[in-house]
Each structure stands twice: as structure tokens, then as C-alpha cells.
Amino acid sequence: MTSHGAIKKANIDVFDMAETEWVNVGKEGLFYKPARVDLDSGKFLGLFRFDPYAESGLHQHEDVGASYILSGSVTDYGGTFTQGCVGINPPGDTHDAYSYEGVLIVSRLEGSSRYPMKDEQLSAIHPGAHRDQFPEVAATRDPIVVPYKLLDIAPSPDMPEGVTLRILYDYAHTDHDFRMTSLHLDPGAKIPSYSTVEKQDIFIIAGDLTTGGVPAKSNQFLTLEPGTEAELTSNFGCHILVWSDAPVSFSTYHGSDPFGF
Ligand SMILES: [Fe+2]
Image (cartoon, rainbow, N blue to C red; front, side, top):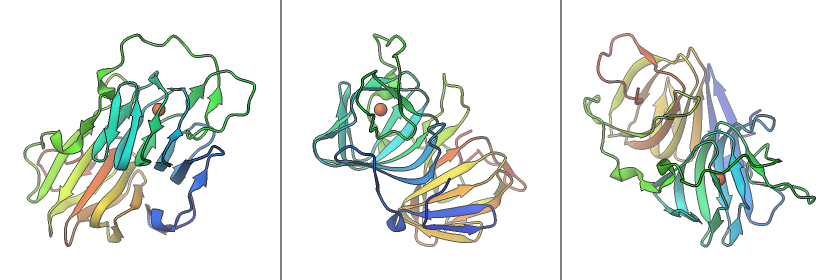
């Protein structure tokens, strides 16, 4: 299912978040804005918003959530994720997230979350959330959950000229062999033509990006279906997040994989 505000060309979809409505989840101060959402599986690509003093309520992640804080902050017992932080919730991660100042988060979720058994109706920020018994909660939290700043990650070597890659998360110890990466493209930089083998999702944090001839800009998602041919170029520079479900194949480029594999 896709939201309105989508522009389709070939196997590349553009989702303009500036043209997409916030969905209130039925609880005060909690909203999402989807590029892609499946209420059965809980798979989600889009934005989350907590208004000041909003709280998620206690929940347990059933599959990976991989996020980046665009503005504001959100706090749980382990620390505070502020603007510029990467936030990873591995399967089984159990917490109650509270935002004192409000927060805007870009996220891709591979599944939903379970909430404690109660008689009252569930209104949760996680699409497809449900009430269930919690499996045992680990006494020691996965260290991947600790807040870390995107710019503190060392760039990967051997990239095309003008391209800076940071591998934010490699989905180790999960059921997925995906990559969440950050790419800065300098003005005029290019990632040479490639074909996707599996799905690839892009969020443009800032700047301009042309993907297989499709122009896009800040606050827009792009989704590339398997088998899509594209090259990535930027006229005046951009900072993007890319979630890749598999390595892509290049015809002429022989450098290091720019999507973190
Ligand atoms: Fe969570």
C-alpha cells in the first residue's frame, strides 16, 4: 500500500512527504507519515512524529527498526537520541520511548511491535502493533541500541569521487542481510549505473538527487523495485539514507560497493 503524493516512473517511485498527510495513531501526540506501510506485517517506510511529552508506551520490537533522528529528541532508559543520531531497535528490544521536546524520525521497520496485555484498545505508533504476552526480556541490552551520531561513523574507503559512504547498520545477528547507509554526494558527484537485485529505499535528508533520470529533493523517499536500472547523480550536493536489501550489480564500475556490502 502506498500513500498519496506518489509519483511513479518506471520502477522508481517518489513519495513526497511534504505532500503526504500525517496519520494520528489514535493517541495524543503520536503520528506517522508513510511512504510504504503494511498493517498486517508491520513493515513500514516513512516518518514518525512525537509531539512534546508524547510517549510510545511500553512495547517490544518483533523485528528490526532502523531510524535516524531528523530533529528533536526521544529518550528511553538507555539514553537520549538527538538530532543526527542513528537509532537501531533489534528484535526483542523492549522499552518505553518518551519525547520531552518532540521528535521527527525517519524509519524503516521490518516488522511490528507487541504491547502488554490490557483490556483497553491499543493505539500504537507502530503500524500493525498488537497486544501479546512478552517473551522473556534480556537483562542486558544489545549494544547496538546505544545512541550514536551519524557523523561519528568513519567513512568507508575507495568510493567514487565526491561520494562519502558511512555504513550505519549491517543488520548483523538478525534474519536480514540488509544495509542502512548514509551517502553524501558532492556537487556533480555520481554513482555509476547499476541494477538492483532486491528492493532499495532512499530518503533524501537534504539536497537534490537524480535517480535513473527521476529528480527528487529533500524530504522525499524513493523506492527502487528489484531489477531497476539507475545511476545516482546530484547537481548541487545531497545527503541521503539508503536501505539496500541486497548488493546491486554494476556493469562497468569495479570499485568498492557504495551501498555498504
Ligand atoms: Fe521502540
